[in-house]
Image (cartoon, rainbow over the protein chains, first blue to last red):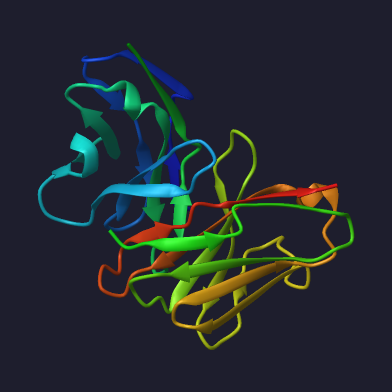
Length: 113
Length: 116
């Protein structure tokens, strides 16, 4: 079965420091991987995706993610965190043969000034 | 990116009433839309896949007679929570798949339903 794991419920980072939000996946075949961000009482905003090609994917708001096939990971990163990056981040994988997305449990990112 | 509008953003209703939530793709056509439910501090759970011009496909455990979905056009899907009860209180989010960027789902802002 396909699944996504986000091992950290919360990540705390000081403003200006690099941040990493972890995601591992379990899929058969080539994965379609996504990161979304959710602000309080809002829907999800698309950040970036990996379908094929370069392992390092650049997305919105300065975020990037690195696809690592051997470690089955797709960690979200940003070189310098902003307080405004504080939100809930979801990793997702597309279920094989469908349009459905399977979401991880989410990681709350808190950036302190 | 593409814009998905969801309305209303918040609704409070009495137990036993029905509530309709609209999901519109504003600048693209969406043959497929999705309805999710999110409980506090939890992930999104897919409820159903809404297909334009045909019946919705419901996930296991979701009552189709309870959560009526209509996808009458390429830009509009509606979710009606029939005879709502307090346990139906939740955050409901829709998404639409952009045919042009077909691997990306764009999400509405969500509807918080509170059933008294």
